[in-house]
Length: 286
Image (cartoon, rainbow, N blue to C red; front, side):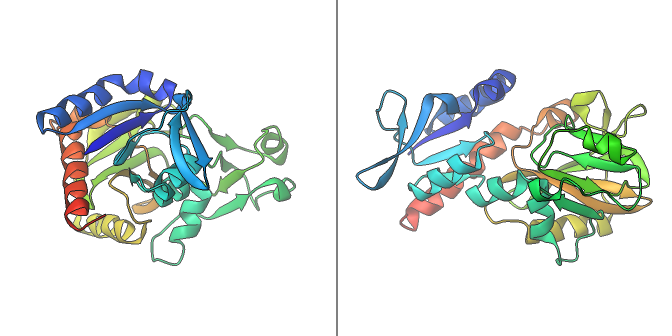
């Protein structure tokens, strides 16, 4: 069984220790996992077949890929070429577009903020009232989330694809729930006293959080409703008063907060899940 962990160049630079820990732990279990860099690959069609190759033309021999790269087209290609992907291509497509996430989960009984899902046809749109929260639908880490107070300010942004939301009552707080193989690993409450964005990467604080039973029930409702094939994700909630609203699902969820705040060996658990699922798949006859 041969597998890879896939990053783009910048992602690997930020996460090389995690990647190498995955590879090392897999080796201790007798499984070969190596690092793949997206920029070194070429998804191709040869003789009417999909073939993943390196840029030099040689084929990539892979039973599975642990995908840590945001590239929905590549994810779709990999699955259709016969490579098992963790997380699945559907998770990559849906969860890396905040608009699609909300559209996909609408009607499932999961509370979410009032939102408008916009693209190039909707550049004249203005919310009924300001302030509003503007998001690039494929943004990550809070770097493309803005508080806008007027139509003029809204129009100053160049985004064609936009998600515009009504602000929640409790700004500067959010809750990340880490989920692996359908089970809650841990929950972390993030807070920024100086910014409506609470992201840890933007200087917010983080502390472990104990979910109430009602909150756990809501998390498991999201788990049951989200796209299939989500092996390791982060489910983010914001607070409207005491009410939790689903904010987004992080497909390529980071683990720094877990390593900082807990003793959970994320790389070992994730590798074990991948190996166990591949063994089951192989025993059932792929």
